[in-house]
Image (tube, rainbow, N blue to C red; front, top):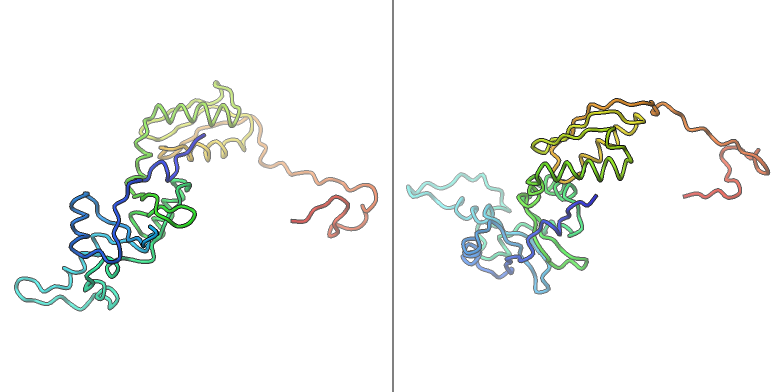
Length: 245
């Protein structure tokens, strides 16, 4: 199975700003390129932070309204200082939270969710910017059609990986939802099949109605009986040929 990575989903031509880029220039970049955020990079193209629409809106949030009413003093001091900034270096959220091109889609989604960010600059091994990936980019995997998902589940997962015969398990895919029906040789295969199917790009969820021939989940591994010299050293001793990791 082949899974798409950040490299496959990211935008490689990235619009950037420098710390000295003015507030109005940043607004102009947003308008000109129809974007909502830019990475702020140093002279070696390494991300220092991000400036988003939310960062720019702080400036308007602290202004009095047309009737002359002043805003409530609810903005934290650090945010108020950024609201008064005139350049990208003062406006940006830093440090930059970044991704690597080789990351998987689930791994990247977890970082975005945990850090509560909408996009991640993508950097190479020395920290230089090579792309940017957004929530929308990651969601593109769910545009994959049902036929492509069906073929990968049936061929790559069930046939090649699990070595199941075509008549063992039937696969139905509708709107990204995979349903498996049939019978497998061992009960343990059911959980493995479900996990592998969930990892296929574009799968929304997996339902299974699978029976099994043998329940192998209760089998205990037999402990080898020590023989020969050193057999009476006790279970805590490392005998000949034993490695400790």
